[in-house]
Length: 228
Image (cartoon, rainbow, N blue to C red; front, side, top):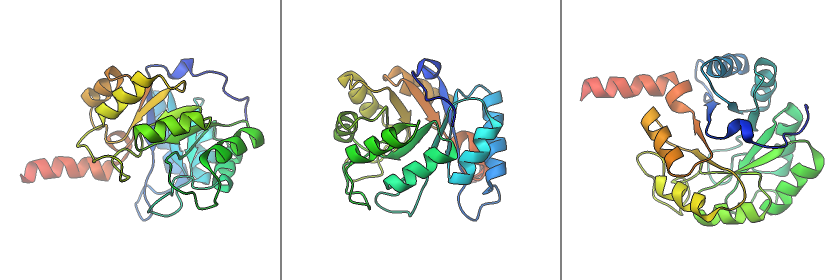
């Protein structure tokens, strides 16, 4: 693990690219994801977000920008780096920042969000990004000690409806509250215009995944337009 990040100046106003493929897909290989990540950095990505221990390890070796790592375990409820064990594994794999479920829902290991974040801080050099689904989540995550707040789960919990694009209302609400942790806009940002809108709504940085790194989804969008 390299030295702990001490500030986020390099991410201010920048693009973070999420490089993920799902089980069973042709690109579901850690080496492939690392190559996709490196390509994104060539295009200007200031940081990379990847899922899975091997993906974190290969991506750390492939890029020289901060790596946000997570471990998805399951499909429902709290499954984004759901426990302290998962979080510490991501940190050990080399994640500069560990992304965890930052909602107020019960965690599988029974620890509170505050205890989980403290566990990462005290047992690794990694920082923590809390993936939130609502304003209340963001406030609680900031109070729990999260270093970054993300809107990753907006529309995927029961707190807010799923918007067609990024939840600009939520981004603006969190930004206006000035919670003391940089706000990362993430979720359904599918065009450069939407990325700009998220930044204009008050985001510190913007994460784009599917629209850049998921060819099957992008192809499906074009196919649907031609079939309409």
